[in-house]
Image 1 (cartoon, rainbow, N blue to C red):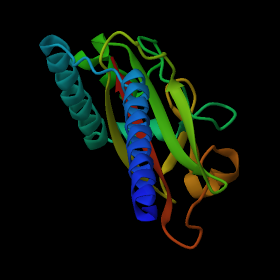
Image 2: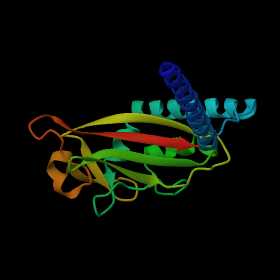
Image 3: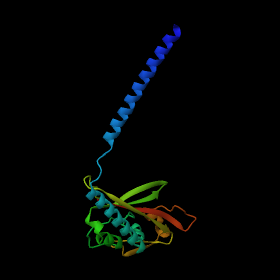
Length: 194
């Protein structure tokens, strides 16, 4: 008769274990569904987000082809920091004009640069508009490879030549990532639109 007692207790333990497992799974599902917006974009928002992403990719490709991205990341203010992107300003560099002349710019934009500084990746917003929480956002990025002999410019329109990256490396926000090589650093340009 003793063996029957053990099987009855074992069955109760398995039943209790199953109930606890079910409660854990239900709790995880409830928490997960609260953290994620499960409502899909409507067709108009999905189409707008896709169109916006395509426009941003095309805009950055055009800026890259014309050398405007390289000029943008190597144009600095008097303190050696990246020059801000100012929409519609009289003093614009090529990248500003390209952004202003694309249909993507009819939306709001945020422009960021990611670069290496003292072994860490830093991000600076050169056009800092907070994204909308109501509209879908689209993001496009391009990497700009900078070499030691790339020109650094300053001034409101980038009209004053300061020297090469190698010559002014102590007075610019970028760090030389390969001192024994022709490569200076890589900057990622990110544009977020909504």
